[in-house]
Image (tube, rainbow over all chains, first blue to last red):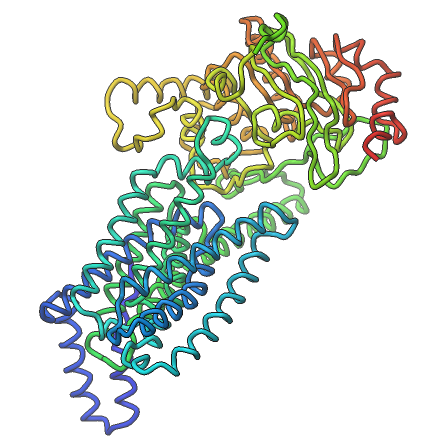
Length: 377
Length: 258
């Protein structure tokens, strides 16, 4: 199902720069190296990082599915943008305490705190003002990213900032990951995955019909917070491998892909997890053999390619199948019109007619007064 | 707390309930009781606070003042005996669930929520599934059980919601516009089903838009226009005179809300 690129990107770049023969040999060598990494033959550290990233992809697919179903896919984006402030501030704090080595757990904690602040602000705006949730997300997301850039520029005055590779955290890089970093990522991702599967049913109920879920006594607000925390956990886990800006796409793209192929929640979560895993597997392994290409963008590009192909060829909801259905129906309608013109009658084609009748008209209001309120209360 | 005996009995009793949005009153000083075993319509112009009343009753909206009792208890204590059906438009019908799965959400009891579907085995699981199936069958949706809800017509979606409420086996049904977007035949079938529930002792309170059917099909009516305009047997409460008062722009209720 995954769309695997035939050549690693870097080999194409090489081919453009050197003569044909050398590029051919280079390309063949790279392909071999890539195949070795893909099949987990790339050495201990590479394997640990690759497996950790795949776990991250599985977890992002599952958690992202529920975020999307809840209509909160953009919250992932806000969390990832907001985490930059926290990372930069955590680094400054660390440096002020006289430490020079970067500490991933501390950076993650900073990212988590600022991400939580962003989510809390968005929820508050959405609940207490008339602004739409998208407006709240867009405002908070860009404002906190601005704050993050300012904080980041402050870190450049501190020695050691380059070594800490803060820039790498924005776009993601597996090259600098130690196996301890990968283990931390794997633990976070697995925890988020486990919690999501355990809460599968309640999360579905709340996402489908919040009022009903509340009337049955489910703690709707707590579950909203839990879902945001799960999204945050995946974002923190992906901070290093995928990068804080791109991790949002890893949460959304596999879920959107899965929705195109499935009509029920459980299969959707499984397909999303598989799509996330596949993207992580392909992207991280390409990056392992071409160190100049960062893992984050490669992972996201793989996920986006899968989405694009699905968008075209998915059976029910795909663009192609919709176009074909429309053409068949139009042809049948033209035939009916032609037959009607020649005197014969033909019934509507039941096989090609859409099953759904769409939203039917609402009942008329049989009243006398011209009350035109903005909506029912 | 000492309760008057009638409040202790009524399936739904509102006492001086007021609700507002951002400083604008939506419902003002409403005191009312639903009669046990009756089919009651809540009628009123747009913005009269009909849906607000139901949402405040089940605690989805916090009232400015006043209280709601279910058989003399709070909603939290009476929850298992009350089924609430929201407006059809309040839900994303493209959500990836089947009709059967929606109805199973109604059949789920307290602890079932913690067990994912694939983890449930045995007697309880089979019973829920059968309950859900029979609720769908009752409303003529048996053949649509495994259909994604997005592929159902508006009337079928409304019936799925009612089937979910039936699966809750509640003593009080609160329905928000259950007949919106429903064809005449389906409306007839729904009324018959609700009538049978009432004859079995269930109390049904439905927000309703059509005055004619409100008079002819319902036992009682609550005529709202921000505050209570009239209550009682449907034909009397919805008299021409009362209706004119409720729907007039200068009704006392509208005046108070201005």
